[in-house]
Length: 321
Image 1 (tube, one colour):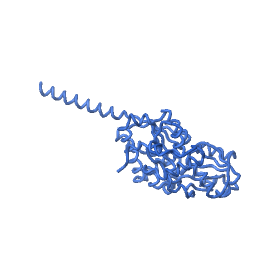
Image 2 (cartoon, helix red, strand yellow):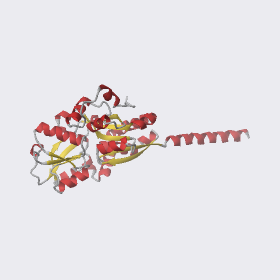
Image 3 (cartoon, helix red, strand yellow):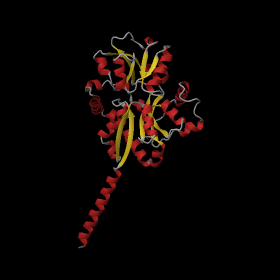
Image 4 (cartoon, helix red, strand yellow):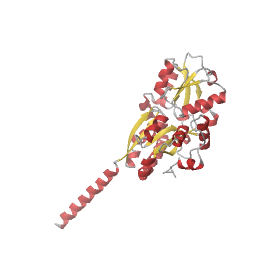
């Protein structure tokens, strides 16, 4: 009888333990990212596929937007708990206007992933040829917006800027002749370059002033972050591990990327030179003062952030050791 009771208690304890683990697995985070298919925007999906987030007892609901400013809206309104790959200047502007958001980490430093293209029969061959021509960007404050303006100043050209939205919409407008030059990130649209339907007329890496500047950051909803710090720490631990996994297992991660984009693995292999792992480093947010100056220069804010605001805009809950 005693033995049966002990067995029953042991089984009950096992059920309780299993229930506790299962309950922990219910930590669900709603995340939003722009530009589905880009290498750095697929970190979370790669981590999910590799089982990394599951090890941290986190489930992700991943949605994609047309760009950073749309992602800010999703996070600020509570539609998403965290947002990824957002132009730093756009985040600065939104925070200055009272949006309940915090910078949780860097997302991308430099602009090596960006490229600008025209139709193959266009008279535009380099960025120097775009004076008087139209060039698309995502939304004001996006990394494409900033890179295009920095390059225009650097090359002393005066194009007209058109908010064309995400990459697919931008491509449609270029191919239909609505705009002269489009933007994209590797590997999206490189297949059309290989097929000689498009030609690259410039790269984000050409913008010298952006080479050491964090042009995109990741953000969190302030209320959510205050209430879920333990979950946020585990999330960022898994996110950092996912980046490491992508670079340590290129055959698997590039095969995944090829599948996400509907391209060949050979085409996906063109990605890595444009995305050095250091560009995806989560810390620090480099040259933040320059991003503030850009936000003022582009008239997103009327004055630089105060010292208190510069401190308050950050809430870093996890730093990889």
